[in-house]
Structures are given as structure tokens and as C-alpha cells.
Image 1 (tube, one colour):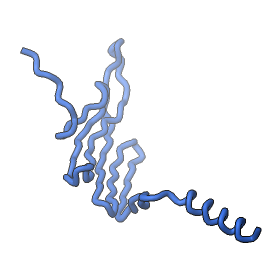
Image 2 (tube, helix red, strand yellow; image 1 turned 135 degrees about the vertical axis):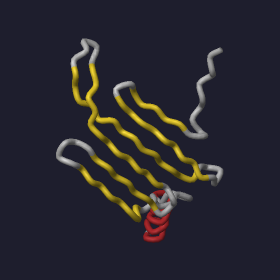
Image 3 (cartoon, rainbow, N blue to C red; image 1 turned 180 degrees about the vertical axis):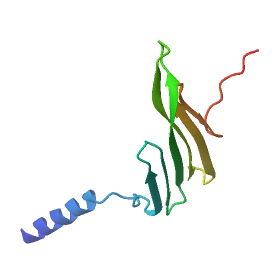
Length: 113
């Protein structure tokens, strides 16, 4: 009976441990700076080579009724190693017109002629 309980315990442990999963990357560097007016900048790097850099700054924009209001314009980039082992970098910005990204892996819209 004890042998069956021990065997079942080993089976339970073996099925609880994910096979082939690795630990998530560790952050090796991280900086963040925020100003009282709303501007900020941050960056980080992980031990798997991934990085991210971003800044945010206030800008005056106008709504549909041409009324001014403050928006934060975000600019940045992130890099990582893709599934084929090649470095990949995506640059982006976001403002009152929306989110815009570019990089080799981002599909390009067809050009209009």
C-alpha cells in the first residue's frame, strides 16, 4: 500500500513540473524617471537580450470642436531575439492620431498609385 502511495506521489510531482519550460527572463537593468508635469522616460534590459526604451512628453492637441487639451506623446522602441534567433527591433510612437509602429516584422500597407 505504501508503495502505491509513493508511486502516485511521484506521478503527481512529475506531471506538475512543466517539461521544456524555461524561467522567464530576468531584468538586468531598469531606469525610470518621471517629471511632475507628466513627462517620463524609462528603459530596461533583460538577460535574454530584450530591451525597451520609451519617452513620453506633453503636447497640446485640439479635439473635434477645436478645443485645446493636453496629450502625452509616447515614442520608443523595443528589441528582442525572434524565434529564428535573429534580432528584431520595433520602433513606435503614439499620439492623438493613434499608435504607429514600424519594423521588419510589421506588415507594410500597400502603396496607393
